[in-house]
Length: 332
Length: 76
Image (cartoon, rainbow over all chains, first blue to last red; front, side, top):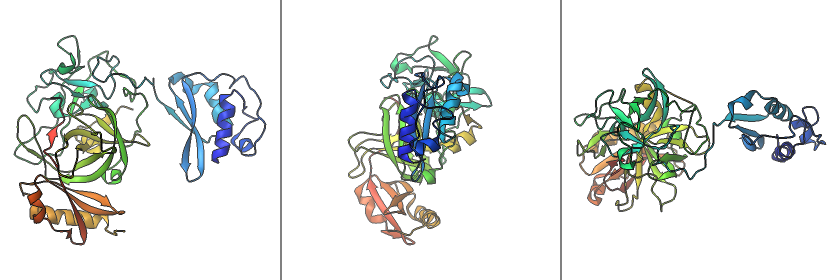
């Protein structure tokens, strides 16, 4: 539908006017009269109505639902009828205020918060995945497996020890499968899984800032030039630009090796040159496209100001390669 | 506007990597974008390494930036 039609329909719905029969997208286009109905008289706060672009000048209602039960409700059906089906409905889960501190203890768990093997300082819980070992946390090897030094089954705490997490009270998962870091060979991934203990299952796609994830990752090639976002333990929510992909022969300093070489990495520059896209403690953050929140990469390394003309830089493993290698799928 | 295709860029990347990939002051050879086309994006750790890099490889432009050291992003 046209933008003005979408705006008219949205205003009618939000003011409690409209009807299945009386205010369709067609009648909205024609500026048709609205009629109050019981179905739409009160829209609950867990159901938000906005407008999104389908393509070109074609717009649709953007319906965002925070309570699962509303997906099958008469209210939602009435809204879809009023829009003649021209609506994009997404279940978000509970949306929290942005001020939540990623370094705090969080129950339920969420993507974007402090986590780590009990022997390390802290990194970031990227997201949740379904794995052969069950529902698990996805982060880096150096966050969950302490650069190969940890044992399968070791305790993973939230928050990480630097943020006050300790054994045994803050254990939420145990180390599962991970990709070994190799100092004498070329690496492609710094990734690990930690299956959650009973009772710590998150909501689908749960991120600290709220909002859901798009289920389909973007290939590194298609991500080149796109604006991206991440939510991390140290710098929180930041924006960047994918400046290169398939970055090969990249040397990264670790505790256990002065330089480990990586191939196939995604490079991200900060969108705002005054702020880094990431800093120490953001390792493990999931990087998403800014517009559709499609997964792009798993943040693992970066450099601060110090280059003559380079500025700060961040590197990430391609997320689809991470998932394929660990035989995992996104829990969204 | 550059008309370099992705396949050209990939071939040029492999070629450049073969030539200079083991240079100790080159840290990362990737594919970037500039003026609507693909370029080779090379990061170096010392200004001196710039002179070892060509302006283009097989018709693909090479952009060079001096960057600081790269570390894992674990909390210090």
